[in-house]
Image 1 (spheres, rainbow, N blue to C red):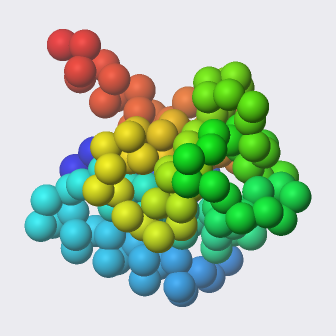
Image 2 (cartoon, rainbow, N blue to C red; image 1 turned 180 degrees about the vertical axis):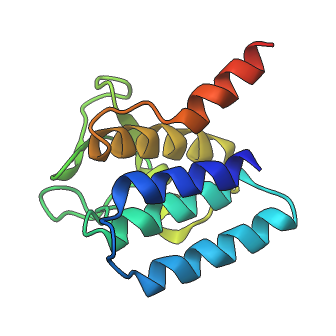
Image 3 (cartoon, helix red, strand yellow; image 1 turned 180 degrees about the horizontal axis):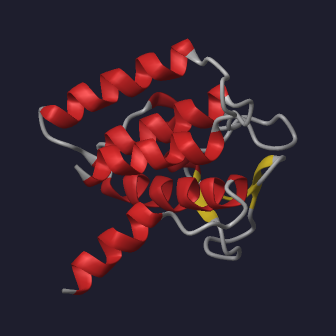
Amino acid sequence: MFCGYYLNELLMHLLPREDAHSRLFSVYADTLHRFAAGARESDLRCFERALLQELGYGLTLETDATGTAVDLDAHYAYEIERGPVRLPAPGSSTLSVSGRTLIDLAREDFSDPRSLAEAKQLMRTLIGHYTAGKTLASRRIFRELQEL
């Protein structure tokens, strides 16, 4: 239920009123059907990626900001509006992700728990940017419930 609430909140905050996005709503319906069978975090990441793509904020995931193919074993800082920038060492940026995570996100393959965790952090940062830092009510409520 919280996952569906989160999706609805994203749509309300990011989509312009009266603007049809038939492809996105098809992805939305498919995601809700998957939730009915049991919500998975990977479904949320796939929806978030599709939403950003539909809004014109598509992620650069398979090449870095210079156009070089992402190296699975390298680490990158993801710069909003620019894409991945290779780092000299892991963790030398606040938004550091592995090349493996970028490729896994591009392929929607979240079988690696590290990729899933890093993709969550990346998507949270990107969505926070595009919602102008608004705290989503669904996240606040979920956090409060976890504290109980």
